[in-house]
Image (cartoon, rainbow, N blue to C red; front, side, top):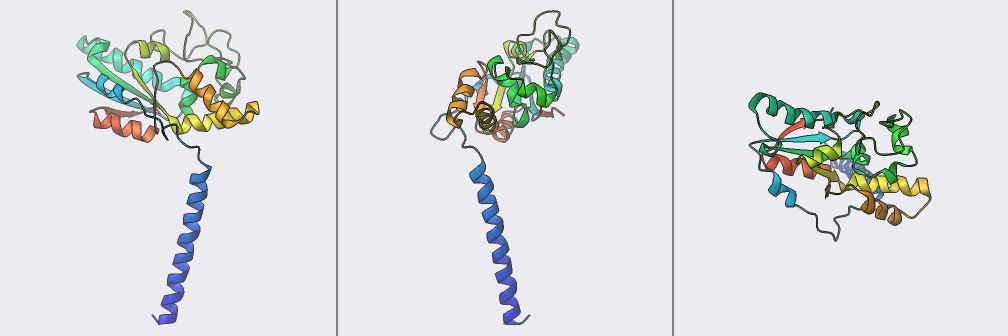
Length: 223
């Protein structure tokens, strides 16, 4: 290869790398800043991962609440085969990406936007949901996707550890800001106010998944 040709090849590679780096920088700039910048995340949930059998459930999509069925089946299976109690097991449910509306209270579901996107129905009326259809499900609800002992809040009361991706929550805050025509920081405050009590916010779902595995959890994808 001549010196001129080598120079041209190197120059073109450098230019391509610069363009790629610029595109990456643009994407990163467009992403919402995580809550954890200047904030301490609560890692105490790791001390609760003490069960003889441990499983983490990776839930990047709502998918009609299939992840809730998986967690319930985890508890039910060990109860029926080995007679184990919920307290003998550790279930870690990682809500990330498009699934994060599941950890938000009814007020943020009231405009129907989350339900419209996912085609979710109210557990009682069967109409498009204007409340979180995965919590506080009345007994005998005809249109629920969850078992009586397998709603999200019920599973949390049974000891399930629920982790939520903060990057995804801040993305939802941006959606709420656009829908309500309010500043993004005000929408982020709404997330703070209406995230379900007992949910642990983590810097990202990827971090939460990796850390759960580091604590000895197996991994199941909610797909």
